[in-house]
Each structure stands twice: as C-alpha cells, then as structure tokens.
Length: 261
Image 1 (cartoon, one colour):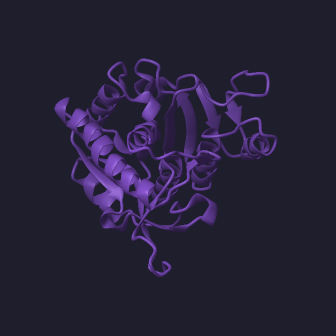
Image 2 (cartoon, helix red, strand yellow):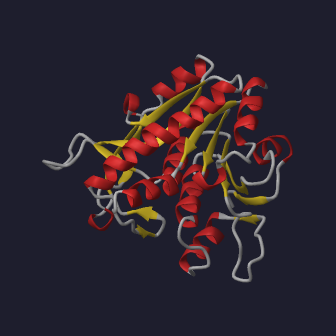
C-alpha cells in the first residue's frame, strides 16, 4: 500500500475537455497503483437547486441536513461515481466504484451541529482497497462514511464527508507515496496572488490562520497535513491543464508541494 498514489479529482476538473481519465488509464497500464477520490459539489448543488433546496457552505464544507444527505448520497455515490468508473472502463482501464460506506472503509462522527450530518473520520478500514488493488482494479471512492457505532439515536447510518478530507485520510491510512489534488486553480497563492511552489506544514498553517487561503482550499491543506504525518508527499496542481496528472507522475508539474520540515 505504500506504493499507492491517491488522486483527488475535484468536480470542476472533470468534463469532456479534460485528460484526467486518459491519464488514469495510461498510468494503470504502466503499473501505477491508484486510488481515486472524487468530489462533485457543483453537481450536488445543481440537483438541490432543481428541487428548490438552498445550499450553504462553511469553510468549504456543505451544510448537510437530511434532504441534502439524500441528494449527496444519490449524486456522489451514484451518478458522479459511476460516470467516472464508466469512463475509465470504456478506455480500457479497470475500475470499481465504491463509497466510504462499502466495506466500512470510512467511519465517522458528526463534526458539529452547524454543519449537520457531516463527518469527521475516526477510523479507516483499508481491507477493501487492498483487495481491489491486489485484483488489479482502481478503487474510485465517493466521499460518504458510515456513522460510527455509537451514533446518537435517530441519527442516519450514513454521513457526508468532504472529499478532500477523505483523500487525506486514505493517504494517511495507506501511507501512500503521493497525494495529488487536481483542482481548478494553479495551486496555493500568497497574498499578492503569486504561486507558492513549496510550503512547510507551519507555513501552510500560517496561511490558514492569516486568511490568505479560504473556502475550499482549507480542507485541501488540512488533508495534505494529515497525509504528511505518514510520510506522503502532497501536491496541489491545476487539473485543467492537459495531461496534468500524467506530467505530475512522470516529471512533476507546476503547482504547490507541501512537505515536512
């Protein structure tokens, strides 16, 4: 498992114009062990909008009531996950779509009342990932978790999880060699808007504390820091660039690296 590369695909980087899926298939055929974690917040928001349900985020995390949880489960665990798997398989790759619920991959507890049914991960069971990787499949993971066994009465069995958080937890649990975030920005920037090529953990924390970074970048940095504690190299790169993932694996592309002091 220490040879695994965990790739977080943001919903904004997936589309008919991108090359992420072709890169994934090529890397698998070259012998790379990949675990894909995907988002899809914009798709969920659109489906909620169709139902007349408003969406609210706090520091990059969706506030999730029961209605939103149902939509997250259906859209991320179903539509988005299976579209990615179908695209990989159609190009000759071998992928299996799962959620953090399958095989009790992820177990979580409610993070706080203000976010509703959003989990902080308390346990990661990598057995299913190991079985799929050993059988030659790419696990494609949707960001949902089991509610831990001591859940409050009446609470749902499933919880929403930030996809960046999931990627960081899986990278930490597998002691992955790489954690790569494919985003819709060039990387982490300083207050003047200049791309920061390298950051130490303390420098990354300082950017959050000073509000230089905000919104969806915060959980990405937190996930990188989580993975770093287990020796993983963490990268945040622009997934909109042609063959960004392939170039990252083969030669290191432009972006931000967060690594230990």
